[in-house]
Image 1 (cartoon, helix red, strand yellow):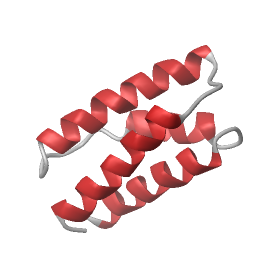
Image 2 (cartoon, rainbow, N blue to C red; image 1 turned 180 degrees about the vertical axis):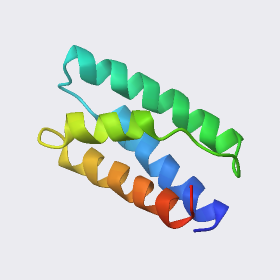
Image 3 (spheres, rainbow, N blue to C red; image 1 turned 120 degrees about the vertical axis):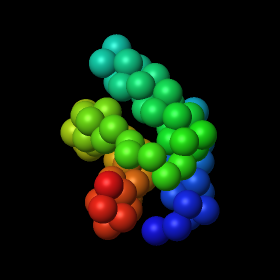
Image 4 (tube, helix red, strand yellow; image 1 turned 30 degrees about the vertical axis):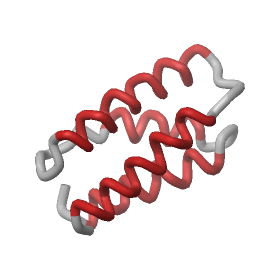
Length: 84
């Protein structure tokens, strides 16, 4: 995956986070962490990202927010395929 595709996917995830409602306290904390990570990834394209927050969010939102979960899964898969 090239940087442009990664930037597009990160932007989609960021947009979905903004539109996500009805989240519990842990979910709010995870979304804040994801938002911070996304900003960092968009600014530091090409560096080694930390995917722990993405994994935690994937697990937490798996049942309640399927669209958000799908985007997180796509991002994790893309990072993995890129060897990150």
